[in-house]
Length: 517
Image (cartoon, rainbow, N blue to C red; front, side):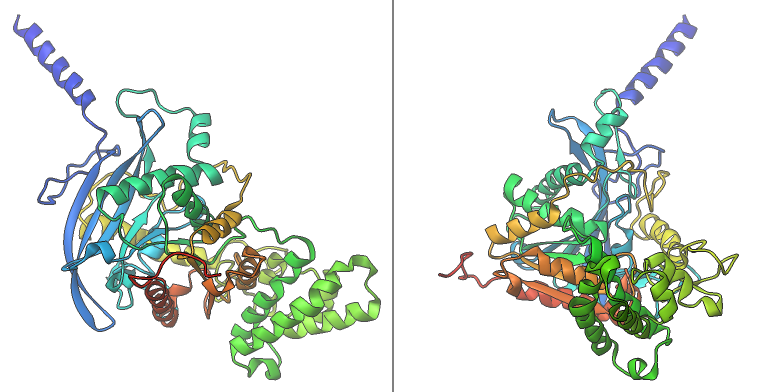
């Protein structure tokens, strides 16, 4: 009999445990450290208190990190997104305080990059140019925009601690269901808009001026979210910030695609000091403006002629390209004026047996062989992972007290990603047209070879062909790469540009959202 009672007790414990929510980290009302398990909890929250100093002013702030569910159309929990939310303390009117919602890219990248290196109250331990230092960790960010805006960092499904979950006893999602619900341009935009709606409602931020900031593929995400939030969630934004933007669905193929690389080549060659003295002596911004004019007025038309270009014209164009790019005239001619990024990265410093970084061409690598047409690895990415991976794991677990054995995915599995029907640029244009309050700022590094700065300018020019909204579009360039904020001078300047953008795009109390005749 005792044996039967013992067996029944064990069975009851197992049954009760099975009914508990999936759990990795939760906290009581005092924000105590949560219990640790291997699976992700759909709902969790840890609250910690901190102080910082920004632009010489000290203030206290609250960090809330946890998970919030994603529901399907039958109100079943199908995923849980991990987030970190910073609010400045002692704010008299939270309703009028801006909220900046931040996404990184990939697709498949966590929100770690801008969180721990750009806008947040902490930045990783790197030198003034962005190279890793030991011990790994974080330090205060004296330029964070937390002084003027609360900030929310969101990790989409399978990035960071965010995961697909099976709650309420439902069967796990199939692979086709996962693809349909999460892993594509438009699926991503749809479920994240719903998630943002829930977050804004839970935290009473409907009255706040709202801003989206996205980096790299995150620019595709936030461009599409601007219209999705507006038309499906009835949530209107004041601004969208595109950091190192993708094409956001705006085509730039053929001669334009090939020609647009040259200003980036020129900026990189200037940085590595391989140009003739007449160009090397110019300030970077002045030099690239000259190259941009050549690209628009001469290179694109020349490339459009293809094999029918006159030999003399081809020779003249190659001469100018060589002067601007640091490559030889013969190298330009060998590529028929169409020099690929890969060729440039491998060959610009070939004489020094060095290769260039893709996302930031200030970074140098070394290959097994000096020959070949592409690098062995990306030196900038290995450098960044050096710094970011230990820092985010330490920071979340030890400073923000979020305890979990779930792995933090710097890059998560979100593939195959459905890139079809990418109309995010047009969606952003339409959102701007419908909302006179909505402004856009683009930020780009001159040495970014993945999403080069001149492509970003071209995208801005094509975003609104009417030209009627160009006064609401702003471009800023920086002397660094894809993550321009890793360079300390640009960290200060780029945050100040965001601060200015936010302050300039909050309308006066009596300023209506309308177009004057």
